[in-house]
Each structure stands twice: as structure tokens, then as C-alpha cells.
Length: 372
Image (cartoon, rainbow, N blue to C red; front, top):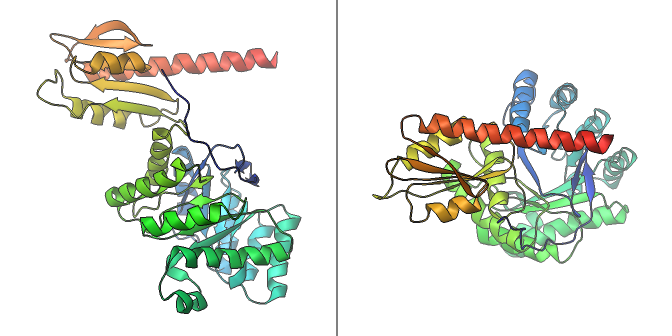
């Protein structure tokens, strides 16, 4: 029996990043960032499309120069996903990408100099309804805060964020979201918990520079999981030294485990032991690889023996319990047919795809009926 997430989310102000709602009662958005050279337009467009295909809601693109800003404009014309421009210091770049159709500016107002420059950026954002993301990072704290605190601390991250927020408040600009990232899990979690009670704007979560695929996934899952369990977080990015597509997949897996979002197949699988009646590990590897393209939310249980198999299979949309001489396949919580080892993965893929197709037909029929 599927259950709703017991997590009560922090009530935040809703903003729009392109056509994606962030905050309020909107689903937690999953985003990533390109790692191509932005001036290589073809490579950047290709990567954004791959990230989008993986399920991303938003993607961030680094725009370090005016040349990159012009390239950003051409990229914007070729992709449909909301784009955030990552900009540091140069307010003229922010003004240019605003003209070229950016959906969000990641720029810290305290870092762009004189008040007239700040005012120019805020005015451009206000006129085009472009939100700003304040992004505080433990590795680039202001020198004054480094001297004050001696080293990065949660309090230093929050104070840095509040300095930038005060500037936006001074200009009566509330269309923003905030991130406070560190590579240290404890520092990050403490900083987000502190600021969550001080502002009502959306919070973008991330453990910055988390590491490679395995270590970064673990660190991000712990840090983001702690905050999400607290109800904190409106967008997430899993920062991995890996293909950005993997960031999206891990992000969804984190949200699926907390029942905060569902996309694609949620596999329930045993770690296998000597009781298994088929090769669980190889079967899972094959199924995950073959079914990566499936976006339909579905629980699939793959259990190697009859100890836990029937119970897990009954609770899943589709289930397989290892048996001898054949394995019992469940559909909708009920025994459906028996499968043997000879074509097990092929049969499972076919049955899962048949169910996906059936559900899509049902969804389309509902849409057609509602439009009549």
C-alpha cells in the first residue's frame, strides 16, 4: 500500500523559474549544472538536452564572460528547459543574459560593486520577472567574514546570506531564493536550519563539491536527507564529480526514498543470499540498464526467495518472488503467472513495459475525457 510522505514541508514563498514553480506547494525541483565550455554551443545544448531527458526541472549554466553571455543567448534559443545563469562579479553579464532570456540569475548582489550596478541588475530582473538566486559557498566567503569567524562556520554562511538579502530588501525585491553550501555535511545542515526560520524565500539545497559518484552520492544523500526530513528545501542539486545526468538520477532517488517525488521505477530488491533461486544482482543490473528510459512512477520488487518475496511483491505494483522450479510473478499485488530462468530478464522487461503502456493509455484516456 503506497503511503504519502509524512514530511511536513516548510512553508515558503513561491517563485517562478521560467515555467517551473519553486517553493510554496510546488514539487521539489531537481536541477543540475552543465560542465561543458559554455562557448561550445553545440556541446552545451547537447548536455542540457541529456540532463532534461533524465528528468531535470532546471539547469544552471556558467556565464563567466560576455562571449559566454552571447553563447548563452544562442543556447537559450535551442532548449526548452529553464536556464539559470551563473554569474560572478560582472553586472554587465547579468544585464546581457537578462536581455537574452535567462530564467534566473545566480548572482550575489553584494559582490557586484556600487549601488547603481546593483540597482541596474535588480531593475532588469524586476522588469522581466526574473528571480535571483543568492548562492553562498563556504569556499568563497567574504574576506571580512573570514576575518570575523576565522574559518567557515554555519553562522558565517548565514551572515553572508543575510548581507545579500538585506541589499535585495533595501530595493524591495523579494523574488529570490537562497543556497548556503559547504562540502561539510554538518556545516551545511546547520546553516540551512538556521536560515530556514529567518526568511520565507525558497531554499535551494546542495552539499557543494561533495566528491565523486559514490562518495558524493553518500554525502549528498545524508545531508540533503536530513534537511528534507526537516521539511527544508524547495530545489535540490546533487553535486558530483560525474556526468550531470547522474546528478539528476541520484536527486530523484533521494526524493523517491522520502516519498517527496516519484519518477521512473522504484526498485525494491534483496541483496541476495544462498536462498536465492535466480541471480538477483545480475537481474537487477540488467533491468536498471534496460529500463532507464521509463518515466512512469512504479514500484517493482525483485526478491530472490520466498521468505520476504511474497510480502514485498504484494505491496509493489509489480513483483517477482524466486521459487523452484519457477518464479512467481505478481501484478497489482496478486499472483499473475510463473516465469523460468531461461528468459527471465526479457520476460520481466516485457511485462513491465506492457504495464507502463497500459498506464499511459489510461492517463491519455482521462485527459481526453476531461477535455470533452
